[in-house]
Length: 276
Image 1 (cartoon, rainbow, N blue to C red):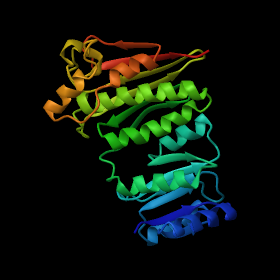
Image 2 (cartoon, rainbow, N blue to C red):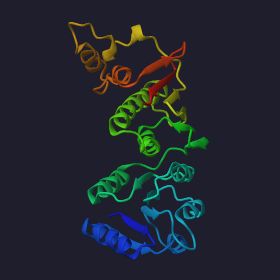
Image 3 (spheres, rainbow, N blue to C red):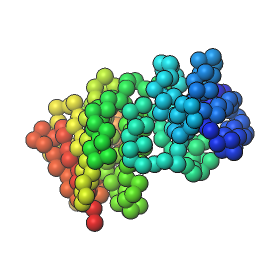
């Protein structure tokens, strides 16, 4: 059974979270600010920390900066402040996830259960740049870490129309998974470089993987090379190779992005979405 510490200065929200989590079967302790939470973490073992950002005495970001190194402790940042500056400050603290208030209780419970099942992160995400218009990260080639990073980067697009945000998210997800799985060979000791650039009329993602690249003609396992009369040809190839179902990544990304440009080796890709 997971043991959860809730650090939240609003008494109504704090006790509401305690009730919700205890009913779901978790052991729960609470703290009214970051300093009280830090004292409890130094005295007891917890599996998960739910931390609000703006609290008295010691805020959530300061708490994350002062946490003792406990590989098994995952931190989920929860706040109503979803400004880009706050999201990026939280990103530097290496949280497991970031969730914006108000949230659906079912969403929180699902996030907690995914945190329970996830192994400790294989390595830290290196933050090269954390400006609202230019975010650049070095991410271990690990699928779970990639999913976490995408969930945080999506907060930077909260001002975009839902349709645009959805298409950009799907395209980025597919390109990132390809980079980690095929370029990085799921080796957490290797890293994928991700850059997010936001201009007035354009959103750009640049993804560079540590692999040797590829040639489109050699991608028999990808739907992008299916003959017109055999739309499922790649699925048969993947089954023969014992590869997981998929192969739609590049095709989906091309459909969702306005421009998709690869370098010569095809181990680096730029995705552009124009903003009206």
